[in-house]
Image 1 (cartoon, helix red, strand yellow):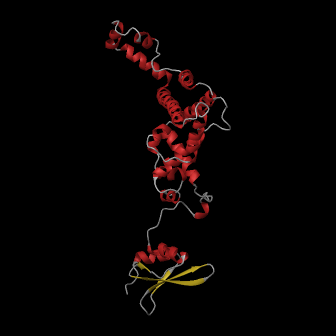
Image 2 (cartoon, one colour; image 1 turned 90 degrees about the vertical axis):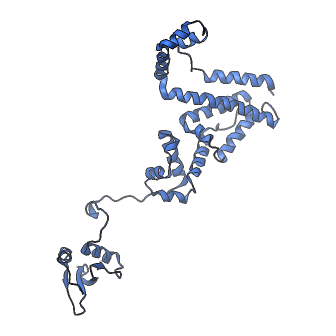
Image 3 (cartoon, one colour; image 1 turned 180 degrees about the horizontal axis):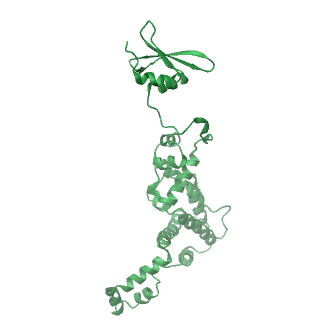
Length: 299
C-alpha cells in the first residue's frame, strides 16, 4: 500500500481527521461527526472508494481527497432559500413565447430563450411539446382568441364585419409577428376555427352560398392584412420618420427636377404635401363594404 502523501495528510487534518495505518496496510481516516460515532473512510492509491454511498460520506470524501465540486457562494445557512418552482405549464410556455415575439420578433423565439425566461432547463419544455413548431401553432391560436368579437355579433352584416375586421387589425398591431407566422401555415386550432366561424356567420347575413361567403371574407381579410402590414411599417418609423423620408426624397435634386418637369402633375402635390403612404383604414373598409353590398344587397 502507498503511504498518505503530505497533501492528503493536510486535507485530513483540515477536516478534523487523522490518518493512521492499521495492520492491513490501507490508509484509514477517522472522521467524527454528531452524534459522536466513528466512521471509517478507506482510501487506496488516492482514489475515493466506490463503497461510499451516503451523502454525508460522499461530501467528506470530496473534502478530504480534493474531488472537484461546483462553485459555492458562502455557507448554505447564509444563502437565500429559493422558493419552490411553480410547475411548468403549457400556458406559461405560450405566454412567454408571445412576450418574446412581441419584444424581439418571431426569430427570437427559441426553446433555449423560452427556458431561460422561465428559469427552467430547455429539455423540460419537451414534456409539453414535441418541437418548436408546436409553440408557433399554440401562439397563433392564442392570438386568434384575441381577435374574436366577444359576445354575439350584431344582426347587421356591415356592423358585424366592421367589428371583426377592427379586432383583427388591433390584434395584428399588438402582435406584429402574427401575420408573418400566418405565412408559415400554422396548424389551425380551436380559436382559429372559432374566428373562421364568426366571419362566415357575418357573411351569412348577406348570402347562403358557401362559395360567395368565402369570397367575401377573403376579400375583407386581404384588405385588412395589406393595410395593417403597411401600418406596422409606418408605426415602426413613426410620423417623424415618414416625414423625414418625404423630405429626404424632395431634397434629392434629381427627384425634384423630375417633379418640376411637368411629367408628374398628380404625384407632385401628393409628395409635396407628404400624403403618400397615408390612408384611412375605416374609409377604405367602408368603400370595400359598399362594393360588396352593391353586389349582394341587404338580406
